[in-house]
Amino acid sequence: MDNNELKMRLDILERKIDLILETLKIDIQPNCEKMSSHIDFVDNVYDTVKAPLNYICSKVSRNAIEN
Image 1 (cartoon, helix red, strand yellow):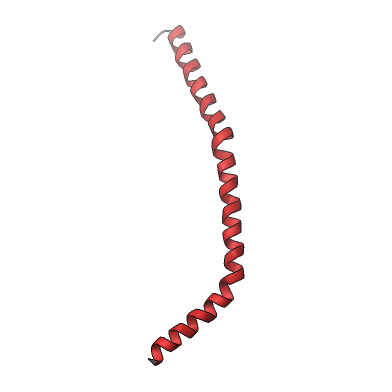
Image 2: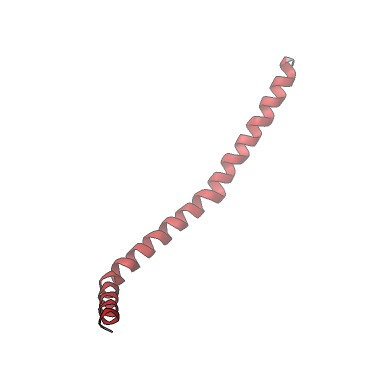
């Protein structure tokens, strides 16, 4: 491989890397932020309903054992 061909291949690789980085910035990062806020929402909802849900489950379980 001569020097010119190596430079061309390097340029092609650099353009591909630039495209990948741009895709990461535009598409992936906002979607990750959306997922993060969704996970926070689910955690908050679970924290809110955890105690009542445990109470109901223990009552149902106790009734199932007694019957």
